[in-house]
Image 1 (cartoon, rainbow, N blue to C red):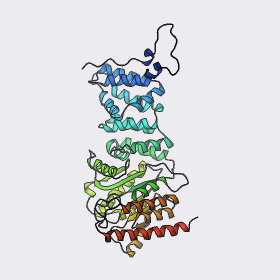
Image 2: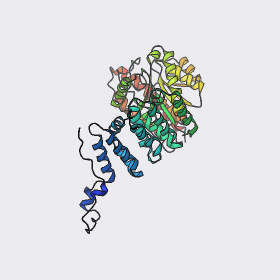
Image 3: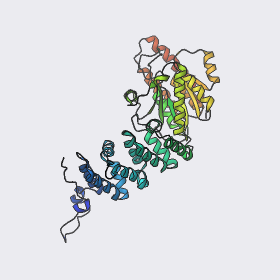
Image 4: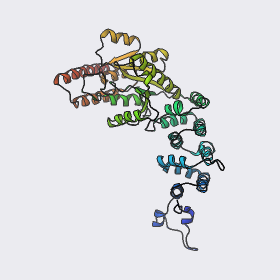
Length: 432
């Protein structure tokens, strides 16, 4: 299929009649003349239109090779995610001819990696992860990560993890990358470059922790628990005088993983619809779906993998008493108490005082409302005084918005909340 003539270089479009004066600053000529990056982007799209043959592949390679440092970074920034995915698919390694795709990967992952912003490095990794990752793709991913150090590496990992779909960092390292040697190189690099951040990854179960879905009959089905979103947000901000970087919420679910990410996509859609966007989701599997101990074992395995990906972070976990969350939490505290800073278990099974005491002896705090959880988090220095008050305000407002099945049901939940708010106020009155 014939292509439109690609846009000419901007330098050519700026040529004027010999002897004419240059355009005045702020003139309409300057306003309508495309920038160099505009011209490159237009030319690239022309080359990508229809079937891309060897000659066009070479022109694309030459364009990326010859782009000025600032232009290369801007070009990648301006190129939409789906078009970069398409470009990765357009460039080929020809059986009897040039290895254009390998050359392109080498350019971005090694040759000119130092010019790319963290967001653009993550964007290239995303494009590689979008397609089936062959050996050269895995090497390119490795080279991008190994070419990034210290705090920049933490930022890159977080950017990959927050991609907005199931192509997160755990999926990449533990599923998409098949080469065990490359996986080991990545994990070794993550460990060697880890600089303690003083921050936590906020890990949470979903069913009966975020919203009513399995065993809790105290609220109408699918109710998002009053105050839970504010609690996540305050834990993410941290307990320091200045707020931590936000975006560290990760759901650890028993829902089984599937290679196409369909189940995770449904989970993300539910979370988005309920006001939680851009969170990471770590799924379970069918082998560990039945039985609390099996569910706990899979969540523990997921957490162990996550710790390897983010050794510079500590963790907090929020779960419920209905499945294996308490078992997982106790195991995590026992195995790595310095890494698991706190475990909060939502009481959805009417636990007795003796059961709560036994949990406390294992380092687990059982709570009835998210104001109760937030008060304990404040005691432990995980959220600020102002953060605790924001959780209480959100919980009160959201409880009043719940359409309960009966007045008695509402009264019982309101009594729990009032009790925990009174405890919160007592704690705050004793704290300078």
